[in-house]
Amino acid sequence: MPVSAPLRVPVELRASGRWFRLAEEVRPDALLLAQAAPPDIAENGGPCDVAFHLPGDRAPITCRGRTFEVVVGRGDDERAEQRGVRLLDLDEASRARIETYVRERLGLT
Image (cartoon, rainbow, N blue to C red; front, side, top):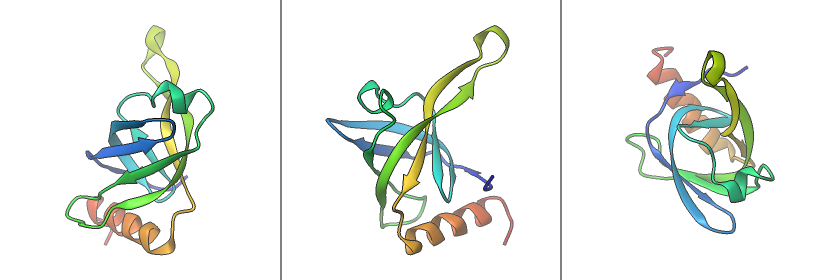
């Protein structure tokens, strides 16, 4: 599994509407959202358009995405929610920007 880094930025999700969710983590192939994806997207796993900015980066990361389930909560509160977003058709330059952010954020450079 790819290494992820904390990320606290708004993510725009577009399908039949437009929604914003806060990202909690990023890795080169996916985002983890702070709350479940909107029902219009989560019910069929996407696809949706995804856009967000890495901290300090003026150019947005844009691509298509599909949601996936993530286990949240503990004990009796444990449940699966559509909080993950796979980043599809991400161009190499955007993937490299995410990889650089993750390495720098985790002190791996």
